[in-house]
Image (cartoon, rainbow, N blue to C red):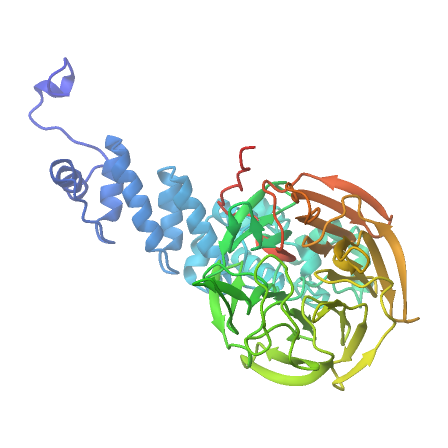
Length: 550
């Protein structure tokens, strides 16, 4: 400007429009000292000056600072700044913050200051929210009432971003009687529910669908297959990864906050992932511990929980009626050997399997009636109030037994034996029946392990087992999970005898049609992991799991 043939070269006074003295001072200090002193009083001036002068490092620093300062009092202004200066990362952060605090934010005067475009973006941004969809609808209606000029032009478009199928009908029916916005709500309900507006008053029992158990709202969340821990070529890992159908790729989710461990109990309760007990190696010695952790995917946070009354590994952890049930397993008092990789643990010293139940409301474990016969490496699943436990090892003997615990009475009952003994297998439930998948047993003649490739189904109504299908790729130590009517078998061992014994193969069995399909393989060979269904936010910036070069 001062050296080229520009008009400003001959002027005695030059005005930098949009740049304040405070903002320019910040840029000058940064240019000469590489230091940037940002605070809430100067941030807007420095950002404006940096954007005007295209000092991108300062723009990024301002964006990062604003991200750390987000609160209910400034989130609207931060979103406006992000939109003004095209700060896409900060814009996403601002709307994610509003969504995550929507219950409280929607009751503030700043919520009413949102422009129509901003409210539309908030509703369409697909971030998880901390309130029900009924509260989302009430917030939109309150905004429309506070901004009457927007009703005719934008009200219908805004209401279409509300998932009215998750709103109780009595709320919809009440709001449909409001002046001005009631007619629009009726139109949206009729459109989403496939009805004529004239049919709405006759719907007395229509209540829409409820969000999945453990969630106040399914907005921004998607049910995915989550792989927890296990072994790979590099050894034991605490890594947790997930697969969403909308992306079709395995991504990193989080890591168990403990030293590398295995053979722990894993369960999902109220959409929180519990990882309890397990064992780890220290100075070539296997250590079994009772501690547990739970992970909230919506907030991406781990928290600790009360430890079990006894340390356990190779046990089962199952959710029944809002509580966690820990059954059997090895402990420091019963473990006489073995180690990682699914080997035997030696004969237990007890003639029963001690059990305990965890109440998340009180964060306490309580002893419950023990399961007859001591066992490890068994499987369990829940149907209604009943907890079913099958197979496992009693010493070196693989069991074919099946027991059911009535959690209301605390009484264990022996059920029909499985057709084949199994250890290191999985139990899942679907349609009121129990599916036994995977595992192995000892062939007495050759004294070697035999893979069980048959999926057997137990019907509690007739107390009988039936074989339904064979797994196309037989393996054990696989991760098995049911989502909807689809049973996924992920990874596992082909055989103990072959060098290339592990696999990342994923196969899916449709329980309704009884047909198998092959899915995209896991990027690594994996085994002794656990797979669970968990609702995960779609809008996460996680890295893909990279395949190991062959």
